[in-house]
Each structure stands twice: as C-alpha cells, then as structure tokens.
Image (cartoon, rainbow, N blue to C red; front, side, top):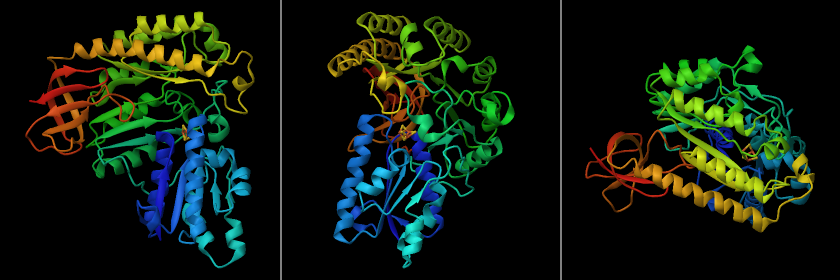
Length: 446
Ligand code: F3S
C-alpha cells in the first residue's frame, strides 16, 4: 500500500511515528508524500495546547474529505488527540476508519490489514485500539529515522508522574516508565550504524530516568554507556526538571566529551507563588542554586528554558518578577508560550484567568528581553572558532546551515557557514564566527 504519514506534535511523538514507519516498511508498505497518491493516510496527532489541537483536527478533516472521494482506502488517527478524544473522533468523523491510543502504535500494520479486509467483523475489531495508558510499547523493529539521518531522538521514557496543574500529558501518556537501558543501547547502536552522529535524549522528563526500573536515577549511567558507542559524536539531553538535576549527572556531563554542554531546563516561571500554583516542586531560590551549580561546574554550558506567560492568577508584579529573573539569569536559549487552559486539568478551573491580550503582551515582553540578552551573548561569539554540525546547504549560495553544541534542532538558533568547499549533512566543520544576529550566527569555514 502507498502510505502518507503525517506526524504532528513533539519529538516524543515523532519517535512513535518513526517506530510506526519502521513497522510499516517491514510489512512491505511504501511511503508517499502526496496525499492524492496515498491508499492509506495515518495522522499521528498532538493536543497539548489549543493550537496543536486545532492543527490536528484540521488535518483530520482535510484528509476526511479525500476519503469521501473514494480514492483513499483508509484513514487512521493515532497519538495524543486520538487518546483524548477517541469517542468524539469515532462518532463525529465517520471517514476515520481506526483510532489508536498513545500506547497502541505497535498495532499499526495489523490495523491496516483489518481495515482493508473483506470481513466487516475484522474492520470493526480495529476501529478503536486503546491499550492501557500505562503500557510501555518497546518494539524490536527498527525505526525509520525522518530527521535527515545525522541526528535522531532517543525516547528514554514514556509518561510523567509530575502532574503539574496545567498539563494534560499524564492523562494522555500515563505514568513514568523508563525504557530498559539495554533496549536503548540497542537502538542507539542501530542508529549509529545508520549514520546518526547526534543522539538527542527525550522524555516528558529525562532526569528521573531509571528510578522506576533500577530504584535510582540512572541517566548518568545511560549517558556513560551511550558515549561508548562508536560513530556517536554528540549526545544532547532535553527536558530536565530543575529539581531533579543531581551531582552524578553534572559530573558525567563534565567528564564525557561527547555530551554536549547544553541542558534544557523548562522552569515555566520564577515567581514562588506561581510555581506553587503550577504544582512545580521548585522555587526561585532553588532555581538560582541549580543554575549556579551547573554554570560553576560547566562554565561553557548553554542553558535553555521554556516559560508560560499569563498563568491563572498571575499578577503584573509576578510577571515583573519573572522579567527580573530572566534579566539576572541570562538564559542562553528561551522559549515563551501563553498559558492555554486545557480541559480536565486543575489550572483550567482556577480563578482569575488572565486575558488573552495580557498573556500575549507578557509573552512579547519576555521574548523582547531575551532577544537583547541573546544578541549580547551572540556578539561575544564573534571572533571565536566553533564546531558546527552541518544540516544542509543554503539554496543558490555558497553557504551551509548548521548547529553548534549550543543549538538543538528546530528550537534553537542556526550557524550559517560561508564556504566554497562541498559539505554534506552531518559533517562537522570548524567555523570562524564573523557576525551575530538575535538567534543565529554567521561565519567562515576554517
Ligand atoms: Fe503533543 Fe502529545 Fe507531545 S500532546 S506535545 S504530541 S506528548
């Protein structure tokens, strides 16, 4: 069958998509990127915030139109929106043939066979596939990497036990379950054999990796083992809860040269009152201590954070506190989002919801301040030599685009590299930095 696969949402969801693509390829299906050529369309959805939900629904409705033409044989919806709104999708969009929950994606090939079977019974059997949300799918089928071949995400755990008051994810993805270390090492070895040079460790929360399986935090042990894999040059860790950063983790980041001096530390806010209402286990003092400890141990570390603007009850004074914290901390990378009330989360029922326009103003304030900070930081890079992983060529120019250890794909800045030398994605290039912009750097190949 010709299959069009649409993957929405975060990098964790992308890993699930890549596993499904691997299963489908093994089953003899071909992937196409034109919906008019597809026999089967699979949409792996997201519903983290309002906009993500809208995007997922829009995609389903568009593809449902194709189904009405009779050309498309099967339309399948998987992932987080499917988990959350299974009944609504089945009842309200009859063109959808099957809905699979977040822990059921291993069933994808079987579901396609069921939909295409002549037996109404088999078609009915695969209409809704919802395994227990706390089940951990760990397939031995190799993933189809879709990120260009030189980097890949490694999902080290599923679910989350933190239950922040604004977040729906534990309901969609279940409790925290670490993937056994030997399975991750097998995956990483396979990825390295395929040419992957950078592994990006993801989970809803990476810092507590192993507690459920091994009785203690084991991210540092996993990192040490991953560093031994030939071919892997960079290892990056995303989604670390600040309160869970522990000394052995800092130590391994210091000692192992393959681990990027980069940490993603989503703090969400810096006002103690707001952090408490968010259900976070930190306060401003603890955040300051953690960040200071990281910077003292690893002076060239790039710290990234994400923030929520306009949480229910947030006052102008608390927004000012956040601005002051950003100003003092000078994060190396920062993303800010407006608060989105999600049904079935405690925060959606809190009093004093903030007006949309105020949230947007506060988000703009944060990003404006960060642009000043990052521009200053980037200007200090001018004249330095840095190592860049090439991502691709700039069309019609003798220039390439790449990332330094300070940049995760899609969320951070880029380094533009001018050169007449032929480079390919995944090459490492030494670059002399000649110019700085708000987010990006520009330089010459040495
Ligand atoms: Fe979206 Fe699900 Fe990821 S809600 S952000 S795809 S875990």
